[in-house]
Image (cartoon, rainbow, N blue to C red; front, side, top):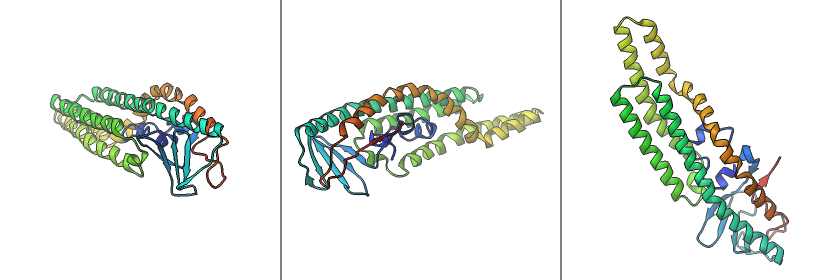
Length: 250
């Protein structure tokens, strides 16, 4: 699992599809096998395998698979700092995700600017895009657990947005093609038909390129993630094995 899931929804729908090469896992070389929930008074880490399946941190105390772990004073301090720092990092990640949504919306509108859309189509496109962006940002703000984004939930949401917006654009391009053909400009008509047919394929690389501007914001999170990895070092669960809530490579 990418640390972007561990740190609460950087791989959010819509934006996730545009950021294949620059999520936290790739940029910060971070990963985790756990899902995490930010509870009111503790952090809960959960995974299907291997053991420990559950690890709960609460103000320096640790329980793994329901068993309280005896910790020395240094490890208690480390875990207390880990919990504090992860809670502090979560809103920063949310902010980057929110900024990613805004950036994706601007990119989509810029692309639409070059399509010569009709007034009604453009107004409807802007309305739908704004509604989807507002809903995504609401979900980001409300979520406290990576369980909210498990499996293909992000892909499903992104596909729903694409299914709503792309046919609208394609239909307008198709009408432009008809108008061009009726006016005798068969070459333009053919070009517009091809563009309508290949719209999703054509847009994706350009949108990905525009989203590269988000990379510095992601990179700014890496030192804090490295700090979390360092704080957990040496801490062991009830089975005596290293806790390893997250891993950071080179």
